[in-house]
Structures are given as C-alpha cells and as structure tokens.
Image (cartoon, rainbow, N blue to C red; front, side, top):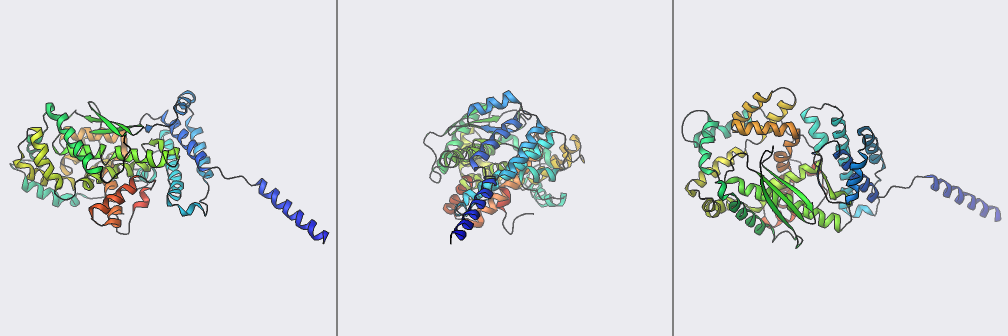
Length: 437
C-alpha cells in the first residue's frame, strides 16, 4: 500500500515539475500593452502611422526617447504574434473575446507589413491592401463604368467632354465660403439628431470643426480621447452642397466620431482593452472605420430623406436655388457608381502602369474628376497608397454584412450597425456568401 502511495506521489511530483517548466501564457492585457508600444514605435519612423492615441502619455514619451530601430520592432512584433494565447473554453462564451484575439493578431501582421515597407519592401497594390487592410478590391475594366457614364452624359446639358460639362454643371452647387460654417453646422446638427435615438453616447461627447488648406484629403477626424474629436475640412478646392452631409456623417455622426467614442466607452473603459487607445492608420481597423463612416450616411438618411433635407434646409442655408436639387442628386448618385474607378487609377499608378498624367486622365475619363481635383487625388495615392479601397470596398462590405443580418428595416439596421461599430471585428469577418471577391 505504501509503495503504491509513493508511486502516486512520484507521478504527481513529476507532473508538477513538467507543468512548472511549461511557459505560462502571457495575459492578453500584457499583449495589448506591448502592441500599443510597438505601434508608437513605428510612429517614430512613419509620421502618418499613428492616427490617434489617448493612452498613457509616458508610453508616447518613451517611444520618442528610445526610437526603436525598425529591425528591432520587426523582431518584437514577430515574437508578440507567437505569444498570443489560444482562446480558452471559458472565453469562447464571449464572442468579443474571440474577436479580440483575432484582431490583435491581424493588426500585428499589418504592422509587420508596414515595417517591411518602411525598410524598402515593394508590394503590388493588391498584395499591399490584403496585407494591410485584410481585403482586396475587385478589378473593374473600363466597360464596368460605361452605363453610368452614358446616363450622366444624357443628364448633363451642353456639348463637349463629359468631365468638362460635369464640372460646369456643378459650379452652381458650390457652397459660398461665407456660408460654409453655417451649412456644416446645420448638417452636423441633423446628423447628430438622427443618430442619438439609436446610439447611447457619453454625455460629454463633442467635437470641434476647423477649416484648413494644403491637405491631400477633403476632411479628417483627429480623435482626442475623452469622447472628443477635432474635425478638419479642407477648403483648397470648392466644396459642393452634397459634401455637407457626406462630411458631417462620415467624420461625425454616425461616422468616425461615434466609432471612436464607442470604442473608448465600451472596449477601453468598460473592458479595459488598452489596444483601442491607439489607431494605426495602415491596418485592418481602417477598412472598418472608413466603411462604417461611408455606410453610416445611408443609415442616417434612408431612402429619399437626404435629398429632402438638402432641398428643404441646406440649399436655402447655402443661398442656392433648390429647383435643381433633384437633378443634382440624381447625377451624384450616378457618379457614386464610378467610385471604383479611383481604385483602378490607384492600382495602375502604384503598380507603375500609369504615371501621374495618365492617372489624372483616367480619373477624368472614368471617375468624373476635374484635372485639378484629379491631381489632388494622385497626391493622396502618393501618401496613402492602397488606403483608397477602404472607402468603397469598405462601404460595400459593411453594407452587405449589416443588411445580411437586418434586411433594410431601419431600426434593426441601426442595431446591427452600432453593434459593429463597438466591436473589434475584422474586414475578413464581414464577408457574406454573396459578397464581392
């Protein structure tokens, strides 16, 4: 009997020793903290990389002081990916925890890609977008845009090149500079009014608007933390009446401002997930951010409600004649169908098939972009590269995902939309069986 007891004791001791030698899984909150510090480290080599950070200030100070070399960041990121633990059986009961594991792994993989690019790695447009944004945009030939172009041609008055006639047509829909702030204020107020019944936002949320120049983008949200944003509107080029709702929704309600505020409220503060205090721009998170911001316009203004609001409120506020509002809205809806032409221009330009002049000509011919605005678009390509897919493909993927769960019922669509905004779901997790390939 004593011999059996001794054997059991020996076995138990051996098992304990083996267990002691096994490396203990690193807690996810430790993984998250190291991830944030790696993103800050990359930001020392790439000024555009860190889009927002509102975590501990000393982490940023340390990143600035150390300026970790890129090869060291690369090695640390590779180790951190390997250190992400599996999801326990207990954790599997919470879908958000599963999503968190997938999110951190994929964000770190995108970080590695960006580090490789900063060290000189060359990727094709599609290779880059898949590695950075977890998605590849479909390829569309010239024929894909033909029907929309023909219909626009029929609607526009006059003769001559369609892009010139479109540019002339739009001149009467420019918001006068002395009315710009008041038009945007009305648009923002309406977008907020339509959003608040469906989204429980912190009482202290707010943002300020600044009008700036000499930027490669038309609008930008700089999230500050504490539920506050700085939204900048670029006034380099004329701002047309339709951009008021576009920017108010996209940058504000229910777009970037709401997205970031919900992440801070529900993931950072409620769950303590520090990884959401930082937003690396060149990452899968951007497709979710841009896709929800663009689709949010449809969610806030279903059906003909946007056209009615512009006609009844924004046109008079801008001092514009609303009699042509319906025609202008119809033309703009057709132009929106040309959105993927921008992807084709960027793909060919970044792959070396187009030079700047050829990319500008393509944008004029297939995206209805004036030469001046097309040149600004190519500067965007220079800076942000394959990021362009996040606007159109992102919107399409978000729309398909949300409506596959909600149909087009407005209330249920809001519920699914908000659920997506406040989650760490990846772009690859948005695909439904009928989604684009």
